[in-house]
Amino acid sequence: MAHIINTARTKQRSIVITLLNLKNAFGEVRHDLIYEVLDYHHVPNHMKNLICSLYTHFQTSIITEQFNTPIITVGRGVLQGDCLSPLLFNMSFSTFIQQIKSEKYRQLGFWKLSEIGIPIKNHSTSTFNSLWSSVQSKLPKNIFNFTIRYISNTLPTRKNLSLWELSSTSDCSFCSSPETLLHMIAGCKTYLDEGRFTWRHDSVLNFLASTLTAVKNSTLYADIPGFMNPSVITGDRLRPDLLLVTENRCLYILELTVGYESNLQINANRKRQKYRDLINEEEADYDKVKFVNLSLSTLGVFGRSSENFNGMLSSLKCDAKYSKYIKRKS
Ligand SMILES: [Zn+2]
Figure 1 (cartoon, helix red, strand yellow):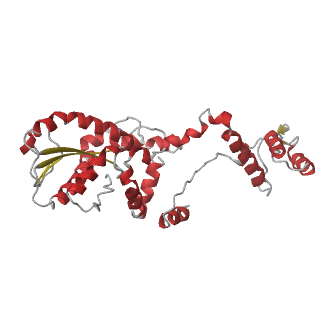
Figure 2: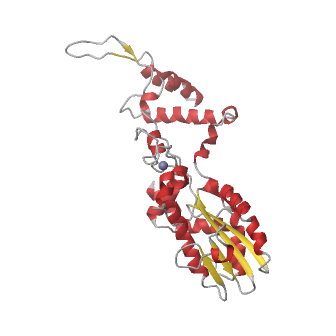
Figure 3: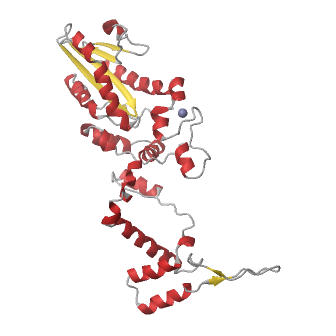
């Protein structure tokens, strides 16, 4: 499978891989299902009778030196080591797949399984989608694999480990809330207190600030060490992440959010609300005040509210190849 993924990656193809892990697969095929399945696939009668004769009145007994068990009727399981068994299993399984694909079951929601993954496109701005995909495909192999497992929600979080019966608990070892992907990425109170989320946020901010200092005849303020602090302009009440005053007296107020994909829009709305008054106040002092709500997901996807970040860069005549993508959390 690694070969398939890598080929798709180098050839820039999209692939969809579904993994099914069946417990005791061969042992679960019911004999009465075999008869049905042979019928369903229009296997000729003489073949059907031959195969059915193998599994009709299938009985066994265990004989040891001390005792014999009574006759046991075996109602399921195809024969181990029989070259016909894989075929019978596949036929039974494909019939099952055909059945649940039918309209009747579709309505019951069998095909809504994809909800466990993250539909990246639903959360990102269309402008940056292709840029994101091309950056993702060039990531080092281990980080690329990480992003794939992140998107399909198959990383070994405690929640998944317990689902796979590899962990006795699904709770976070730090705060004992359920350890889901969202919890790891943006929810754990302990991580928050330890400053891990702040580190991630500030790493991106640091990159942005360092890059934007190159904008000619402008003054930059950023809420991280090494830069003039935005409170110089806004006071201590509200401290945006980054301020940029350009030569034509335009004030950019940039607020950066780094979070979980499905939270991007909620966070963006909250911030817009929070800075509304500040924007109005600053309009008295500058020719133009622009609020830029940059929301990045942990995977480096730009949230929908980030459209005006693109506008900001083009009006600053910035090179669009700012490569701030995967600032991976520790
Ligand atoms: Zn936790």
